[in-house]
Amino acid sequence: MRKRQRWTIGISLSIIVLVLITLSLISLPIASGPIGAELRAYHAGSFMEGYEGWTDRPVTFEGYPILNRTGLPETVLSVVPTNIPPHTIVKSGVAPIPPAQGVAFGWKPMYWTSLPHSFDSQRGANGWTPTLGLEATRPGVYIVDGLLVRYRWNHNTYTVYLPDQFMLCAGSQQRGTCPTHVALPPVTWKISLWSRLTQILSRF
Image (tube, rainbow, N blue to C red; front, side):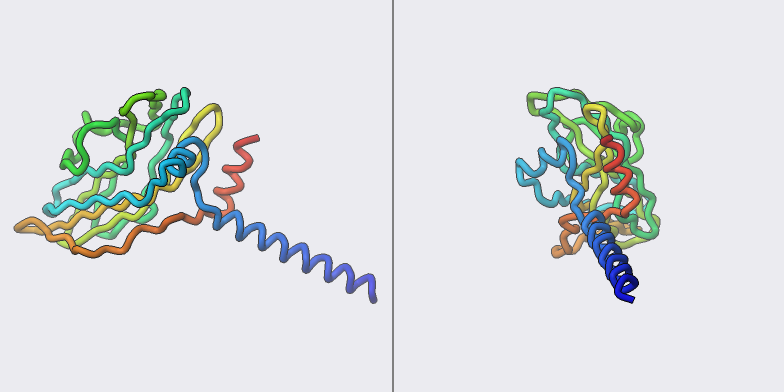
């Protein structure tokens, strides 16, 4: 009987430990690799950008600028919005710095850089920025909170969460009006266990 109780207690403790490890893996903020280190070193917070426009007219937004100071190229594999509002068409990618932010480039192919794309290390002021195109099909205020950027550096693959916020305020007959107070995007983003394990195993 005691042996069975010990066995049951051991199994229960193992399950509890496994659950705690799983929760810790899922809730870890995504800020890995040199981009994560760059953001932490310069205390980068939320980057917010709004545009008052019209329905059925795409607008291009640029996120937090990234400077690659590592001496090795950074290859951006994907830029994925953490949420997509209804009644919108969304496109994501990257762009070099400059041009200016908040300009309505729309879907112009000369502006968008296809992925994957490699950016060399820049010791000066140049760099790159995650880019989001947003088009509203109905009047309203549409907000995208956060981007997940997956990139490769020095033969390893990383994922970093950028708390970038993009707001399109669209009207049908006249420009839309943006609200003066908007909730900030999440500071961190939780990732699925499978994605986290894949990220960990990819380092070996």
